[in-house]
Length: 64
Image 1 (tube, rainbow, N blue to C red):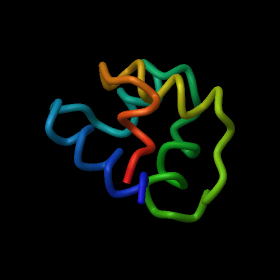
Image 2: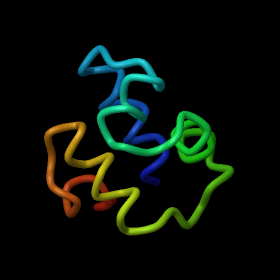
Image 3: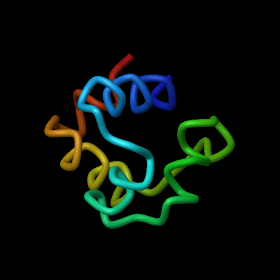
């Protein structure tokens, strides 16, 4: 699931949830909800922003 993948990649890059949110241009709460699995269907724009902030492609982020 991408929630776990985002959390792992964020931690590997040494980013806080707040820093990832700023880099991805999304709210802190959005990052928290995605990582916790509460937000199961984030928008493509949100996911693209997170992927860019993590330095990976959207495909890499959402693949299983």
